[in-house]
Image 1 (cartoon, one colour):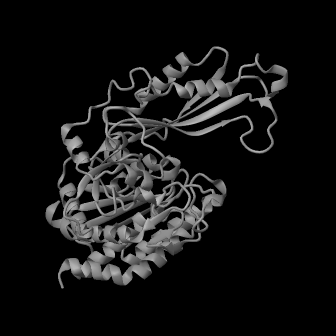
Image 2 (cartoon, rainbow, N blue to C red):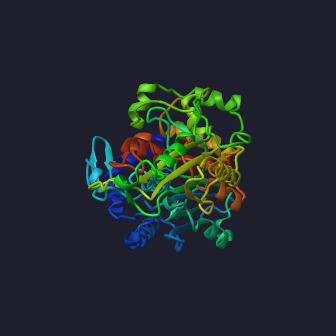
Image 3 (cartoon, rainbow, N blue to C red):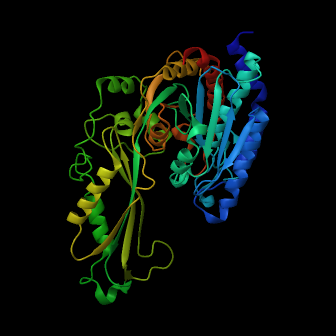
Length: 462
């Protein structure tokens, strides 16, 4: 039996056990940023540490973070071979259980080739892909230890913006020496057309609160003469983009690098069909910056979204009052050439110049948890991973793509001084951060096969 057949047969034979173990882990509600759930982050970390020990890792440790514990593991069983550091996270997003139709968020079910549950795709399945990739690699090669030295850090606060990750990386810098990072908190393009992610956008969060009357006040007493912060905030938000879909902060595009011909060609080579995209992304229409394709807008151009908006009485009985305050939370995605500190200054200047003198306001910019854009440099591991993906997904070609979200890739690269290479098993239709999150089981199995082949080949090619 050749290696590819051995890999696939082992994964097929062990799929029920894989899903059983993933289901058990999903049942732990390791929600980030919710104080009453914090003890579940510790339970989740301990569960993962036990699973890594059972896989064969001789060293597993729990490192306390700012909001949740991280799991560190090490298996140095290949002297003279490369060392790979695997990064991911075990915390999950908060849920609105009333919006889930397939199952309760932490009561996983299998249905239609998918496993539903919070964290099933983002990112517990991606961690399990590595665990089972290692097990498959050992089975297929008959080795007692992986062909490369492995280290692993799975943090417990990524969904809260990784507030303690920089401190952990610096405090344990010597323990984290490696030749490269495999960053597993990303998406693939399509189940039938794998693509290797080679970039991730930066991220800056902002919150603006606009103040009108000193208290909520009956509109029948002051309507027409009182400043309404909901109207002023709406006016501000309406000016964030111009008629061409461009963000209007002065100087915002000065540092943005133009999409290179090479990158345009890579993205153009991916199969893109508007109806397919609208169905998989659950979006109603395609909008955005003129002059760029959808994939360029997603991965190579900056973006700004309003992710929360509140004023007055959004639920319950209306009091017919002019609200004293209106607020909006913004998510700003940055790209190559931009720095979040510069963007933060641009936001400050724009709000100050644009808001009416009739209102007071407060602008908060989350620079502590901001993340910079990162692009993987050309390195041997990219080519090795591409070959492994072709085998794992049984594909003739492996494309190139980006990640529209953020993540601490630049932080890992800058602190550790090594390249970061991305590989994840998620799909846009997995509903990350939304109701009915799920993982496509066949996609997960192809990801496990990919990682097994990657371990088989990395010692020879890195």
